[in-house]
Length: 166
View 1 (cartoon, rainbow, N blue to C red):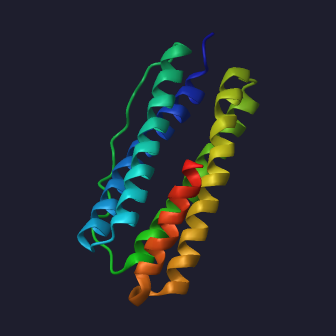
View 2 (cartoon, rainbow, N blue to C red; view 1 turned 90 degrees about the horizontal axis):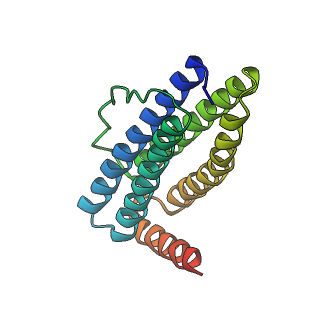
View 3 (cartoon, rainbow, N blue to C red; view 1 turned 180 degrees about the horizontal axis):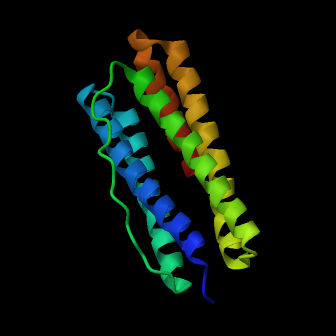
């Protein structure tokens, strides 16, 4: 089942973005760790792990369809932030950008009549709805709480984690 080179190129590029997200979320997690906020540290470490899994899904799919894996250069992540709002806003911007790229890759697969890639990408389309929603809500909570009340954000994130376990 050969996949057109333009589609493989788009998938490789997205794999690179997923690896970049993995690294960026590790940096955000580390920044929150340095700020003494263990729930936000764990939340973003988990996000980093998810992004790594996403990158690996792209790698495996490219291999499965006989495409040439070509991991692109990875941009160094931002390591310092003025405050929690900046770190979370960057994360929301990232998720919105990923959504746009997933949509563009899906459009390309549709244009090329590539059914396998369309089906593969549908999982990511749905996943991005959840990712954007989660980051949007977290940013709202951070803004409402303000920098002086980040322990309220910690409580919110802890409740999110418990709800996810249920």
